[in-house]
Image (spheres, rainbow, N blue to C red):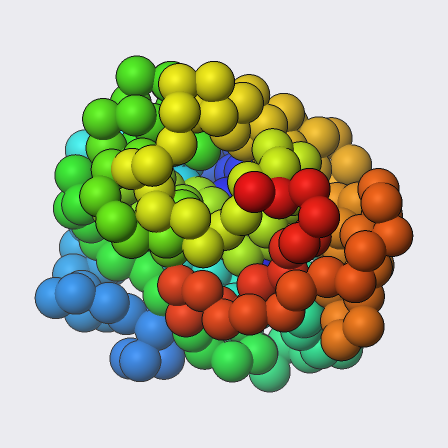
Amino acid sequence: MPEGVEVEMYRQLAEKAVGAEVASIDADDSWFLKGETTPDELQAALLGEQITGTRRIGKLMLLDFSSGHRLGVRFGMTGRLLVGDEAAIEHLEYSSKRNDPAWDRFGLGFVDGRDLVVRDPRRLGGVELDPDEGRLGHDVFSVTLGQLRSDVLVGSVAIKARLLDQHRLAGVGNLIADETLWRAGLDPARPAGALSDDESRRLQRRLRSVVKQFLANGGSHTGRLQSERHRDGRCPDDGAELDRRTIGGRTTYSCPMHQR
């Protein structure tokens, strides 16, 4: 967390800042500035400029500015976005439920008195001026079957690991991956390149439906599998005790009965 679904919720909130002119920049946390970005560069590129649009590629949110510069914002595991007094998400599933301004890592103040703030307890996110967008794979909300087959469902690496590879498929996190594979009836440890045509089509359909439902329901923690993601958890469909494994470096839950 947050996954592509949460970042899309942040992007939708950031739309409320489109047209706002930057009056101040709070970038005192040097750890939170990524790449070659410095406070002076941010001041020169963004101060006095307007936000002209918002975009998202996977877990990367982008703010476009009238200067032609872009600001990339990543939220790590615990980052949230606030615009003025409004938060797209009150708290994240695996983060503190406290709402402490001491965790504010970056902010833009606007001429109209509002601000845009990244609040991140663990400081695992970051901002970067003009990030390399080409390093990210196909976006989870729009990936086609052809793109999935050619760039994701290849080789002997486990399907779960391929889904989590942001250079191939941007926006999938642990919860989206497990829910998708559970709904598609696919064992997360199977080689990605071993899926049949029917299985590939089923995976693509389930992936698209999962992210749309998660977005509509308020986040990646709203899946049917979520309440059983614990030791001795059971499959919501057939009642079998879930397998708990580490795949792709992440704790993975799957049903041994119907995921093949």
